[in-house]
Image 1 (cartoon, rainbow, N blue to C red):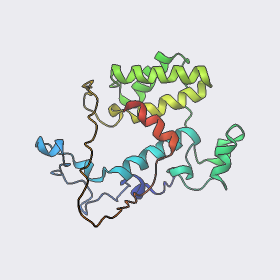
Image 2: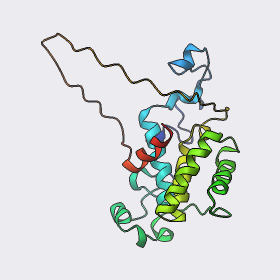
Image 3: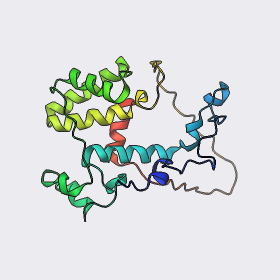
Length: 215
């Protein structure tokens, strides 16, 4: 099965690593706390805002709509209208409008059971108590407001958004709020310009709202 846009979307694809020798530079160190701590982070060579957003868009689409090209998906074209799928969700037929779908179903719909199973499948059980609590609460809220299927999709998206999914290290939360950014000091120069930064891709609002759960 051919996946499309992975190199531009998440920065990785088979035989397309950023080094001509076919692997990440072992001595690469991401700037900031990693470099200051004298640590290395080879795979961070392709980690930037567009690739983070590209992964979340593609993975969330896989959970919601299966493998296709819609809304930043990793698959090829499987339907004539992505907008039609979004607007006619209850008439969507994944067996003919996608290249594949996720068929995982929990043994029961209890929040603790669902999160425990997803933690085992997606993080090898590393999901921290703090993350589990956040996901359980979000799952219960969605379950009471919508359906078990919708709550399961939300739980899956939150697990893959958690730090434990992206690292094999033990995650320990500080429990501290991030400081607000400092207000910029106004310039006294007569000349002023607006700088427009165009990032490659954009994060859908649903993806943004799910990611904010862990912020």
